[in-house]
Image 1: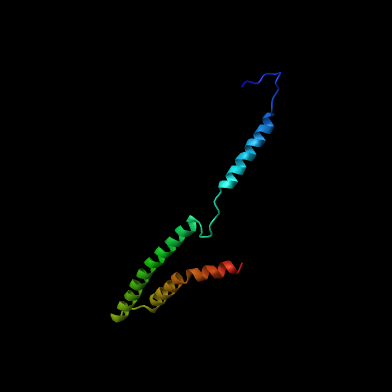
Image 2: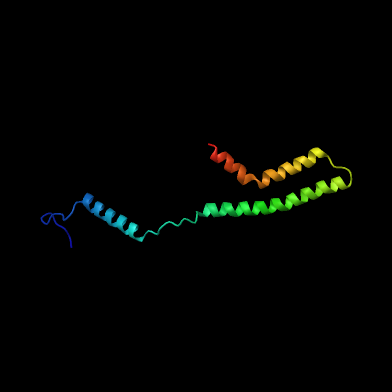
Length: 106
């Protein structure tokens, strides 16, 4: 059906855009899925990286303690390096707690 000047417009362009916009918003709201509280993909990805790094740090920590033990066994242990190894291992495995202290203190 073609509109002529005599028929006039049924609806102005602005009003038609408003109606279409409202209908589109209503359609989007009606099909929206509720957000789940399981966390985002970024949080799960970073959690996976944290687990992986903790696993690697465990292996490296065991090897470092074994190296200190071997140095002590052979009589070449330097107490400064041994303490450094122990402090490093402590920082690695208490990183979550340390970050928690820093973030809750602010």
